[in-house]
Length: 114
Length: 115
Image (cartoon, rainbow over all chains, first blue to last red; front, side, top):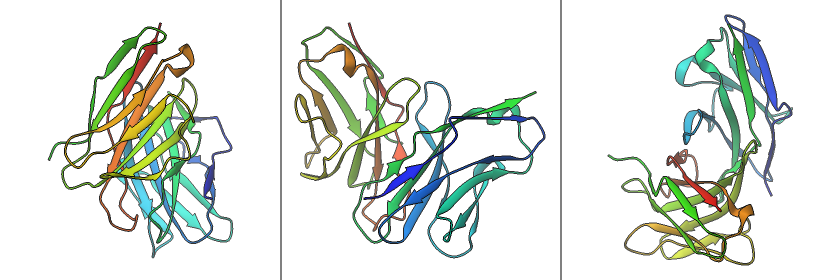
């Protein structure tokens, strides 16, 4: 069965600094990987995904993520954080090639300090 | 193309009553997921359905909870005899049948409060 780990409950970053939100995964086969963001009292919004190809994936709002197969990681990054990036971020995984559910990590709360 | 529509957005039920949560997937999407989010917790998978078929219900509590996705109409998550611990935000997501590389699209959620 697939699983996702987000080891940090909360990440604090000063505005303008680079940010990283960590994610590691476990699947029996090859993964599809996703990042979502949730603002207060809202649903989840899709940010980016890794399907195949280039390990560095670019997504919405200047975010990107790097797929590392050997470390089974898919960390979310942004070169320069904005206060408006403060939100709850979820990493998710799906087993490639199977009609399988999407499993989410427990989420990481990102605080961007002005 | 409207997004995933969930209703109601807020639902208040007394202990012992039934709660019915509805989800209309995006047009052309044949698969629906239900997730539960407790305060300060992550998204817990509940059930994964396609029309007229439950694909995976491994996250559903064994009692009081059921889900369906009929050929016509929205997907329904039904909670019978609600208890205070059922209070949570319930999110629905939909995706097309495409071997899984398309992301799931989420609704705004239904916030259930049991009093």
